[in-house]
Image (cartoon, rainbow, N blue to C red; front, side):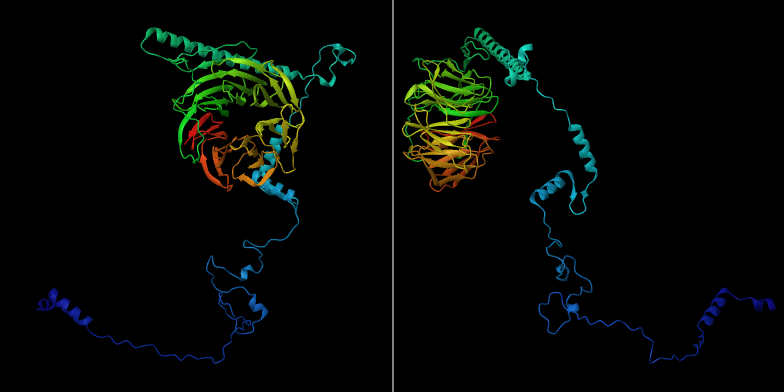
Length: 571
């Protein structure tokens, strides 16, 4: 019985546990303690601060502040990038404070450029180096390697009696240097090799053309006709580029087409676009000239020593190449009738060519370098040449000898221009002067030379003949009257282009309304004659635009040439 009483089920046990949990438990709080308050606590005394808060942007003060309060720094956080007037009290510029010091312009510029180039410079106060000190040692090492011993040139010694002034072999201080002959021999050999190579190439082309003509009778190809004249260095010859030199009526390219009417236009217009490009020179083109009267042929001289004749109207192709100079061509000039022309080259020679047949008629040499040539308009048998010996030489073509010398300039003669109905001519020189001469009188009638003047390597006459324009090397074109009294027109001055010591050619429009010139950056500038303002700028070439011509019988066509080897035609 006791065992049965002890036995109970699991449900009864769970009910007993839940009844015990539901009983409330009485918890007594801890006893309360009273807190004592000290009415006079010990507090550390702070420093007195009489500063008064003012806004940063306030512009007026309504009390009498103390001096120290006005110049105290701002308290509290500041907005980054905001203007703080108190921070500018010790500054006299936006970046800080600059102390005045006396430094010469030469010292300042030398130190500035030295720091820009090498990364360091000298401190004038402490005599120390500012910047990258490693560059100092590198520069010293470079300077040591660049130091070389200068070799003195040895003069020519022919015999033992050189030191004896009484002997014929005495040279003294006038003897040539030994290096001169060596350089001349090298120069002659190099030019002779180039000439031989050109001759071989021309002969090969002619053989190929002949073989093709024999095999194909129906096909017509261009034949090259060359005229060879013996010379010491260069063979004067010409190459005709075409099928036949004469047409069915026996006329050559010198005949002007019937549809071309040489009439001066009443009004000219500004060219806008390029319509054609002539290419054929292997180096830069230095000068261009139009044939007189008809202007249907264009003559160009290049730095490769070749002269080319181009067609302007019909096919616009090269007609003939004149080969006779081994260095660049400096100037060209057509005869008044257009049948012959002169070429001046840096090889110290002036040559007379037949424009129709391509033969070299005559050569003129005096041992000096010609810079310009000009036919006398009244007599085609005489011409003038400006040379590097500061003289103007007058030659007679019939005799081939010099007739007159105009010796007044103090530098090389650059230009020769006839004015006043061809009674007088104007010359410019490297001596920065302009001289007026009467023909056949070797004394200058007028000299214009001022301290502010510069060298003028190009001159052009206006269509009405009343003015002539000079290209000055101070980047401006100045105008002189071409009448009885030659003087400067101070109201006419054309600026805006960059000459950069180049002899950029000047030209006028046929109606005289515009004046044009090239510049060193390959542009063509067009000025209005009345207002002196730049009317338009055209980007023509990649290199310097050395020459420009406004076609005399076309209202809006301009020809330009450059040292990039191209000739452009604009309309």
